[in-house]
Amino acid sequence: MSYRVSPDYVECLGINYGQVGNNLPPPETVLSLITSLKLTKARIYDTNPQVLKTFANSGVDLIVTIENNMLNTLMDPQQAFQWVTTHIKPYFPATKITAIAVGNEIFTDDNTSLTSYIVPAMISVHNALTQLGLNSYIQVFSPTSAGVLQESYPPSAGSFKPELIGVMTQFLHFLQSTNSSFWVNAYPYFAYKDDPTLIPLDYVLFNPNSGMVDPITKLHYDNMLYAQVDAVIFAISRMGFGGLDIRVSETGWPAMGDPNEIGATVENAATYNKNLVRRQLANEGTPLRPNNRLEVYVFALFNEDMKPGPTSERNYGLFQPDCRMAYNVGLSNLDRQHSSNPSTSISLISSASKVANKRYQSLVHWMFVYLLSLHVLMRRQT
Image (cartoon, rainbow, N blue to C red; front, side, top):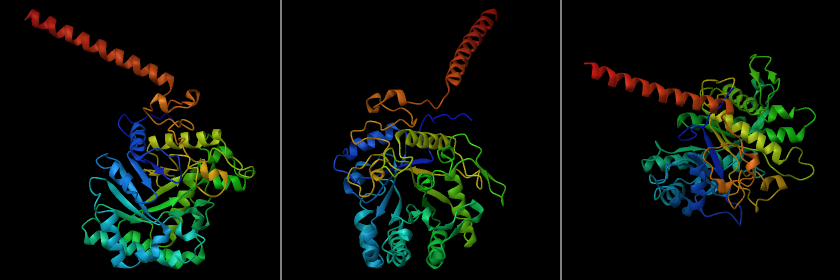
């Protein structure tokens, strides 16, 4: 299969712009970088006023986030209205805020009380948007870890953990009633790290491989990300909400890790993200929904040096904080100054295609010259 970069922008690919670092560039530089990558979708993990102001009139669709520790407060409708009035209304529509992520990975958070807060908080935020006339422009959702699944293999066996069934029913009903999408954070890297002897590396990296066939649906999967997404679709369908749109709010691969973080290398990170970008440029869907383009947000734009946890957590970035590439995944029109290693640059158009394109352009040129000459000759004869 051949892939080609859109000449204008990448429609179904977004980037997660985290800011947990003390050496990150200012938002103006970040916006310039994002637009140079031909990306028009980004997500931030707060409502940083400086970012919201900078992204005004940029044409970039922006997802903002309500931090997990705010959910208890925002269950109160008055508090939610005040929050939307303060954090959203002053910047919209100049800043193209398209969605509010209410928390992140609530259902798998160590603080289990958050599970009881999530749906009331989403309802309060949505109602506040409705009161301000913004609900038709801004979705409300909550990114969910793939860890909410009790079963994910094969994809047709996808089901939610029994202890989440009650709240998940309310959660899915809210998404359906507000025409919002179900967003999932899906990381094939974690599955491979936990069982590298059983899971083929090529399968998780989108490299050519024999893949697997779901014994129930007979659908063929050549990569784990699509299998994970389809497992979520089956789990949702089992709950009676099969029509929901599914999107990937986070996926990525770390370029460095601790000794026990198998597979966290620059080579694997570059391969995973490069192949993911190629799939997105081809506007692919999953085997279960081949005609529905899967929207994916890559994690992350930068390496963030202040993130807690293992070494991998600080090394998911496509770029270093000084805007040099950690590795090139093939996004278009990158300025040479951003590349730290030109030898890693890839082309999404084969050399044969480039030659053919030049030949085609030459042929068109000479056909035009021929027709123009013929036209002039005929006019002279008349």
